[in-house]
Length: 147
Image 1 (cartoon, rainbow, N blue to C red):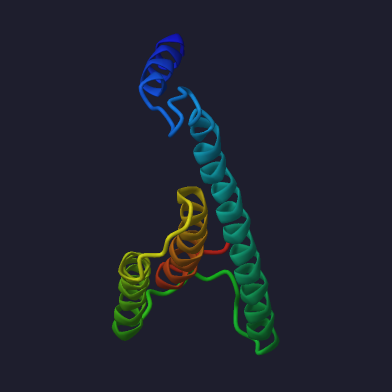
Image 2: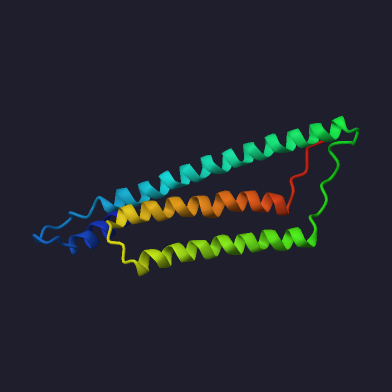
């Protein structure tokens, strides 16, 4: 930790602002990881929300099957080839949307502070990546119920 602090202080000593002052950008060391950790918290909450929605959906589906007289708790079957292709295509589409979003920001030359841009893009990628990915992969690899 001491080595990190020495390297940090040495590196920020050479970064001067317009008035020639050193260490004015030192808050970046706190703000940038803070945004990332906050984004991590939002991603976790969103994934938990999607998982709860899926559990409610699955419990309603199992109640419907129980009412129809079918047995529950049987191992889930592998999805059809068409469903697998559609879900993998959805993952690729999400990746394309992320790349397109970055391209639009660069093409329009959106002048905004770096921290604002990082917060907006990170927030968008949280919902396009982990949340949508969680939903898609649980559809592709269905969860087995505990017996």
